[in-house]
Image (cartoon, rainbow, N blue to C red; front, side, top):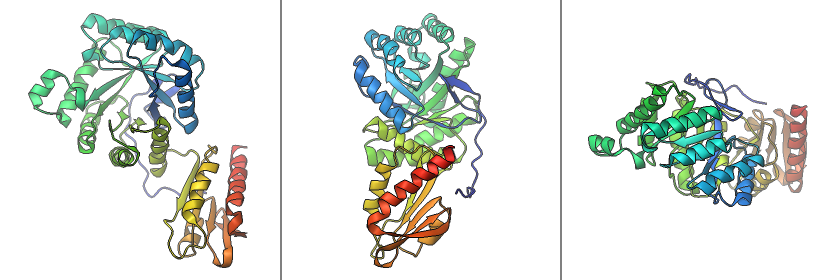
Length: 364
């Protein structure tokens, strides 16, 4: 049971590119990305982490290729994973060529720091020959020296100038299969740069607040930065950068999209913060349900409210709802309608059964 969003977000129209079997841009769903933090040469560990990332709900994963052994390891890694792999390349143009030839679906590069035009041409030729797209990754922490001298410090105009310069390098070689990012660890700088860039290009944009920080602070910064842009219709794929397990990045990314009704995947739980009126332990119940329902991929809304003040109203707007009642008798709602009373000790098992049943019905 889903209500019509109060505000429909009108997405900015962009060109469509392919990252493996994932389409980025246009009317295609906004995809979620993460990046491995294993040594790429540790093939077994990297495969496991990519599969964990995919299971959490990522559409694309990025893998660092700092040396020849890493870029060549991609060939074996890609055989055992289900989502497209982006090779993260800096400076060494041969690593980009090797990554493309070993199965990468996309190369993350800055054409301006790859080297002279001959080297750039070789990278683009390898990308074309292997059906490999490119992400032009501009970062406030690694702007070109002359641009920094011109603007004195990283600023939106500096990031946009770098982006346009790098775009021209690709356009001049008739390579148009790319997306672009203009990232900073500063929320205001990132937002302003993306807004400026979105007004002058129609290539798909990869959103992110780079080096956002730990789980809590990084999630908040990313939610503010990416949320502001997404509400303006800007952004075609996102990556949350956290000093944490990459699966947490995917979880936050999906939650941001779900909160804006830009993506529906898995169970969306509406729950109260709890207070003295609660008829059962709301916080513990929600934590347990999040874990037990993590395997559900079908979009389902679930409300867990500890008392009757807001409970019935929230339950009326969700697929499944529990509202706390007196003497351990809580009310279960299905599709907004009172269904039956549930004892407090039975809430977890009952809700899990109903959610799994609903998911099965929707899938069939």
